[in-house]
Image (cartoon, rainbow, N blue to C red; front, side, top):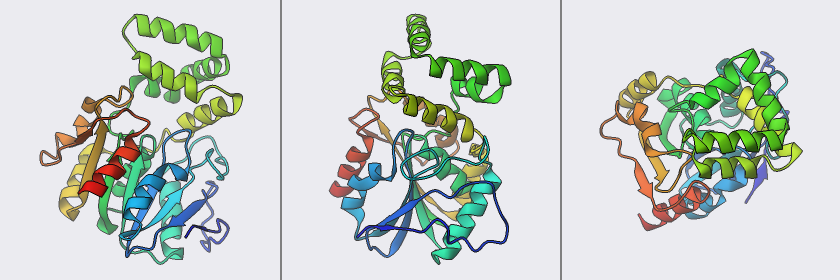
Length: 273
């Protein structure tokens, strides 16, 4: 059974500038799982996982801002304080005390930030090719400075110029060709280009401290699983080292797939185990 939760039922007397994302409920298991999707996706990307685990978990799957049925942000950037305020209201409204989280790609940032904000309430954290552990220098450059943000906007808005720049970076060995193909697919329409630009800028403050996250995982005995694609050029294995080095017992689960089909392969992994 799928249920769309009303986004206007927030009783909080503390207004925040962040428009609430839509969330959808699947499954009827005794445990609660919150899910955060990747860029250019919506909550439906997790349906293969839901199908396998719907009797163990009740899934609350979000359409993040700029995606699916959710509205845009009311300001340029979402802050950690605003994300915390939203989740506090959401958990209170739905009477959720303990829960788990799953994040794919860009959604990994939200999963890690949620872990840092609510460590004593989280049972498990599943990170699927997660963004947010190692910050790409290109991402840092594109989102932190006025000049580079405007250059980013220019190249996102001018596809032909973007392709020429991408070809140059590939020839110099600075960017993987598969990453460029992914970018071209993600930027194929004006709507997609606007979504990518607004998301990159809008979510740039959603950053967790890996040293603190590792400490909180140990202190609260949070079950963390990291799933990576063996052929994933967008998120290579070394991108998770800042976290796994501090948690030596945390061994990434490497599956024979690329970036796009990782959730399906993770669902198969859970089906087998």
